[in-house]
Length: 311
Image 1: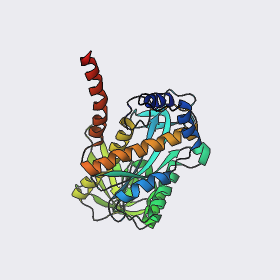
Image 2 (image 1 turned 90 degrees about the vertical axis):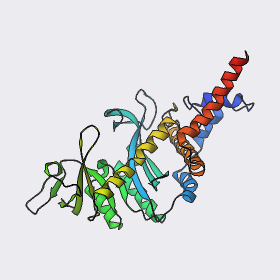
Image 3 (image 1 turned 180 degrees about the horizontal axis):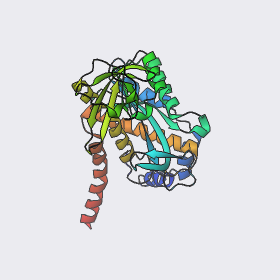
Image 4 (image 1 turned 180 degrees about the vertical axis):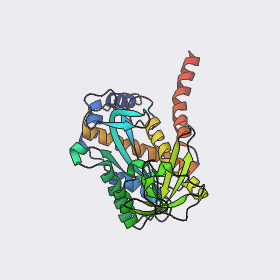
């Protein structure tokens, strides 16, 4: 929560020595390589803060940059929305719950097909199933176009749940029983259009334009959805992007140089649980994670200034 530097074992030991606690850097290394911090531990901390019968689920993935790494395990070349190209990194797939004000990670998976032979879509369905088994009934499940395949859509429908996603412009739909055409070829009214999605069934699709002037196509199985509902859900989708930014910028998610697979897994678990502390404080005080982080940093800056002025 406090670190601005790389979250290395050596620097962790150095910080503790400054407050009179002697812990060798090897102790931190053993913690990362011998413990097994699980998704279940994350869930137990989150459970008291979420409402199982309301709110929205948002699922997406992000790449934990390891662009210059040659020896860190569990890194794969993957498409990065940040860099707009394929880069080397660790794939993190997250399921978050939000009520529009607070965002909590319910579950996460690390993309590591060499170890578990699971695709990102496999992880997507597994996390939703576990959440439903825990008693959740979200209003809508929201996700990006990467996860909008027919198998995922039918999986959610079979659970009796609603979904909202983006579609690529070449997805085939039948608007008037005259044959399938690409979504991008249609002129869509503001309140959307009911169409038949190939191999799925009837859905409602919408069109919007992002700030860069790029067309976006949205789809849902809620056939009565209108413009206002679509705008609201579109803003809810953005909560997971804010979540990704916070865990990377203030929770040191990307700033760990350890090489072993288990050590990276445990560091990521700790980073996500550090995020929970920020969000719990946000819940209790109303302060944003960035303001809470600044209050921590300000102590060190004040101490530095007092020392320099005294000299």
